[in-house]
Length: 252
Image (cartoon, rainbow, N blue to C red):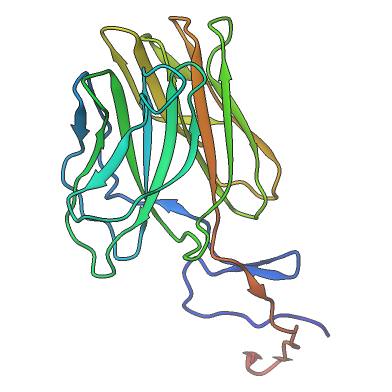
């Protein structure tokens, strides 16, 4: 009779979905540092030690105006890593997501967001394990809006079991999540800027449209971006094998 091989001693094993082995999805690691914000040219996280090979995302929101690169943040870290910007929106303010991979040995580090001069901005760094090592960020989406609407961004995922995270830059105020969104960090600064970093509540399976959004008490024009972090690309599932059952010895 058709069956499957029963695994023994495998905590949280891969599952078979759509004929493929789907590894456990990307997870936020406990080493993720607290968010930081400020009205200076540079803001820096506290020191943290990510697992070897973990994906590190820098989610940044600032009050820089649209146009040119006057709002372009430079992301650096204390280990001298190379950062790649995956998503950016700066129609009114600026929201951006950049990434790097941690050292293979794992080491303590800090991350800094630096602008061309002193201005309001917030930074939330995420340490993510179990992301695809070759193409960790699969899809991205940017959005912007006027003060008549609270920040929101909708992205359509392309892979099973993906983690969706994003950041919004808006006005100072109090932000609360809407259903399906978990706010990871919020900030509000005297002046013109506040914002949030968020994730979809739970990984997304099957692929489809998802929304990160918030309510806010102080309306402002805004920009937001979201990215899909995919699990390691699934391998083909092994052929089904019979499960032998004996009345004397149980399952073989």
